[in-house]
Image (tube, rainbow, N blue to C red; front, side, top):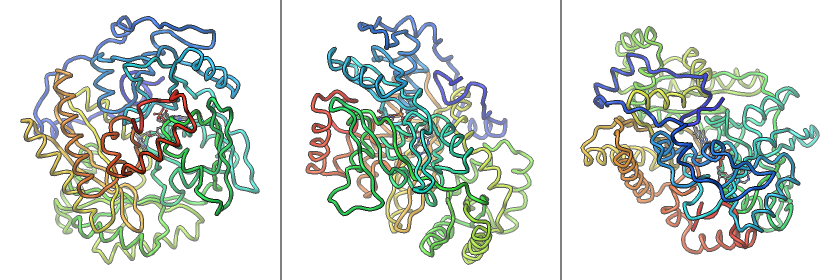
Length: 528
Ligand SMILES: Cc1cc2nc3c(=O)[nH]c(=O)nc-3n(C[C@H](O)[C@H](O)[C@H](O)COP(=O)(O)OP(=O)(O)OC[C@H]3O[C@@H](n4cnc5c(N)ncnc54)[C@H](O)[C@@H]3O)c2cc1C
């Protein structure tokens, strides 16, 4: 069962070791822990729904569970019971016909509809606006791989299927979609398409926009096929309207996705560089020399240290801390995790090439244990947010992407901005970053910050808002995208015009008005 006010399955935990707890409290200070609000108290505060219909669920628990996603403000809302808007009802369609019925009911009743996949949005995508009456349409019952066309290497998949369900069904036939965002257990195909999601191994498999071939979107115009071709020169590609549409055009009901045969071999390694500059140059060189890895993730020195501390593998960490400096890997060391996926022979050859390129940058030997452990725990890592919260700490992340000649500058500026903002608020912060997705022309930068939380939710929200605003301004100023993979929702909306320009926003607005002239689908998200 899913946690109602935190991340993930209630039976899964990533506990905070004593080593990690002591490290954080020494750095950030202790916090007097206030208990989270009890669900039963929160349920009593939910106003009665004003709509009813046999295919709608209006019970308070369903409405509570669909009121917020997974952003930091969403966590404050759930943990402190400060939720000012709930859907009037939640629908769980099982067929295309159910969806049609719900859309027509919503039109008749002048209600908005919010398409809901896994609710893992970290940018406020699925939160009902306080001033609108909403039905949230949870797609999770439409979760089947309907057909695999082996000849065309395409799989027809219902949009409500989550990562686990998709891989389970495809793997049993020898195939994979290869889309592994860290929210993989819960996020869905429809959500990935609607937010332009990126998986860990997108370097090899492609981002969701590379995997999306064609699909169906349902709105008041009926079922609209969004056609795909191996390639087409017939003007602008309509598929690009759907990618990143954030629920504003209608409900994506299914999509044909490019699939691959399960790889013959897949391995992950850790490798250390003596400092950031060497590490960054190594990954840039590797990608520009077409090294056929499936992923590369380079942590700065602080993140390398924090990952050691939070790993819970104290024995390994103590040995590493004792011997690494003797080998020249002092406190500036940066950890790269990389993966190689594909045919056995090609994988073995790529590992050799990787070793040779990284050696040029004075790397450590390739360490299989670290890569293996990262792969084993990669979907468990987000569970640390639960343990951190319980121990009195908040964690949030910022992400962008930019060209190589500005990657280091952007990364440093973002960390500095976060530190200075916390200093101004009289608080301490632990901030670190990694390059999460590598491209020939640049990289995505993923910054994490951990801080002591406040017992007063207003104060906590002000901290978050102040940091978010300062960092978003900095991203724009340095020239990065406001989101590499999380989308716009409401949290990034004030900054999207810097990227798209007025004409661009007008064009997006026209597309939305054309698909959804009644303004019925997820109003207020992406653009005003
Ligand atoms: C712990 C954690 C780790 C994460 N890691 C990653 C990561 O590695 N990579 C990454 O890209 N993102 C990541 N995210 C962000 C999030 O998982 C993605 O944005 C994901 O694509 C959202 O999918 P979802 O199914 O949960 O969509 P939801 O959160 O339910 O919805 C997101 C948006 O998509 C729309 N939508 C959903 N389904 C449909 C549909 N069928 N038709 C039309 N619109 C629809 C919604 O209306 C909304 O606007 C992470 C989030 C968390 C909490």
